[in-house]
Length: 259
Image (cartoon, rainbow, N blue to C red; front, top):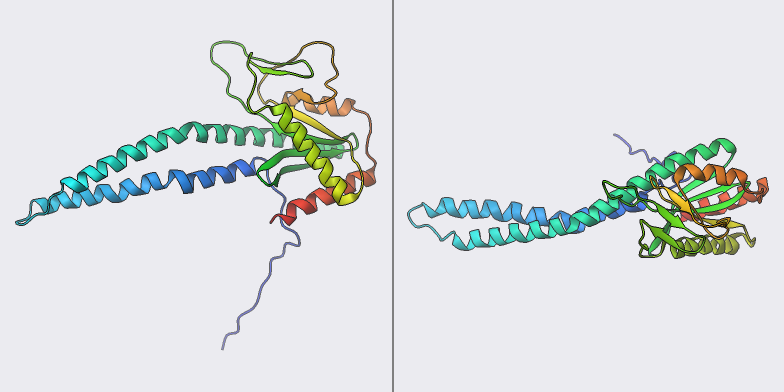
């Protein structure tokens, strides 16, 4: 007589999130909820129409015309919906890949003792990356934008206003990263009772950022991915080892509580 052996996971705590994980999850939801049905419906109706045509040639055949018309309409409508979703899928993939590239580059900061957390979610939004180091806490928003072919493109930032190849970006990424920074600061304050220095950072992978005028980017850093380590290195020491451990512990606990 065999007895069932109860088992449990050897992992004491669940893993933290990966860079771009929210966009991966959004792509999966988009595929299952919106993309897949427009393939499944034609795949059912087209064979049904073919079967009706086969029955058409029997001694007392039913008419296949109705099934054929329904199948054609379903195919055309599905093709329309799939084609309409392609820009959104492209944007999600581009954003996901950009977050992964930035996330991988941020891992190099660990050699200097920094802690890197990815994809911290809340109700209706997420923070792409958070770096916790002796130089402070940096809330990083990644913006991966396609570049036009055949000409040079750049991002112009004067410390207050941001232009991407001459155009403003909607929604405003400066407003977004400031809001995310305030949320992280408030989250740590509520959890620890301590006010931490939190810096908003906007990263644009693959773009050239032109800082116009003499400003220290005191409110928001708008940088290329490669420039961030140098900015952090030049910053003044703002946290003790105990502060780094405390902030890391409380943010990690928050991330795991969402599982």
